[in-house]
Length: 479
Image (cartoon, rainbow, N blue to C red; front, side):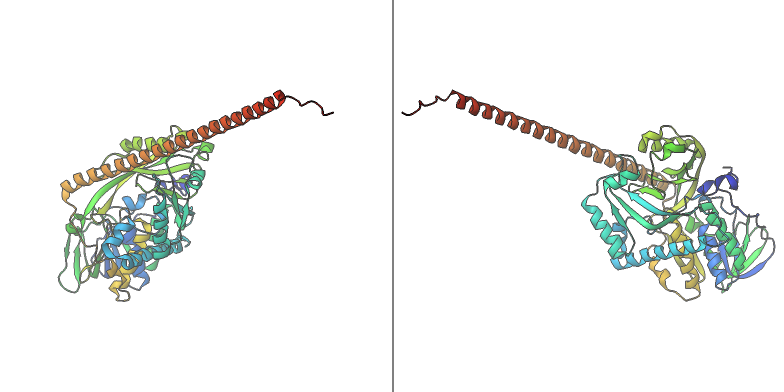
């Protein structure tokens, strides 16, 4: 996809083009403390943290920085992971889950601090995120707020249905959970800002330098590229589904998922008639994720597939979703569309930790957000310098084979079933709401009719009493 000029897209997320000049290929032998393989958000964050810790760092990227999913993210920064809270607690227990959740809040602080640096101008930061339910969760909202606010220590607010619909003018949503400390930034601008910070701290970045082989034997590992050899004490595998030769074992634990995203043409005043919330919006069914950018455009992601499809074919899905959720917008024109493969693990959590002495992994961030890449980098660097043991919190989420092509077929089926289930549940919830509303209206109408009958009856009785009094004979006067 061709990128829009920076001046035309400031703050427009994946469509912005804030890249720096290309980096050279590695064509000479090099010795460093740390070699990072992959220059996405995770890899560049590791390079930045390591360089600031005083380590010599080399980053090897097989393509160009930002060519994949990291350079085309929606820029939402909020606490939590892509795993339902209840599932996370069931797997590791409440205290462990709370500690993991706290790490994402720390990751948010890291991203916000970086976004304030002069290396990241014009990130178009906006505050607040709203998670809306497409079913009437009722009493479950209180339980969820208890877990998030008390057990996990997050700042959250519960929104009633009327409040949600006051800012999102659609009957598709019911209750919501508002995250006031969450925020949004220009995702691509942030990626290249991290790259500039890492380079300024001393990290050396090499593009179009694929790794063809790694020799893990010995204290100093050897990394081979087509035109040079690199030696390092530690290696961080920060690639995703495209990692390939450096570690096929890692790549095979990731299910590739393409999610369609579009940037609409300017919608003018009609957008305000549909969306009155400046932050990002996600639904609990995982169907849609969107926000306003540039004042009068929508950045909207919807639809997933485990097999690559041209984004233009997925535009129809997203355009249909926009029209379904907000009929008042009618047909919207699409300026840009994009889909990039993210790596999703079988257990849904990121893979962060030490696989063997000197070999680390930071991968599987699909559906887990920007905050996790930031905290993963800090934990790994502090872990390899033995300053922090919290990286072990991710030990329960080890490498699990994703099933190859069969796994992709099954994954696609599971996603479609979950999506259709969420849509069906939403349809049923709205049907129940309409049924209850109709029943209430009928009850109110019946009560009005009963009241009218009572009034008429009282009037008749009053008239009869008056008539009877008029017919009663008047006694003659006494002598």
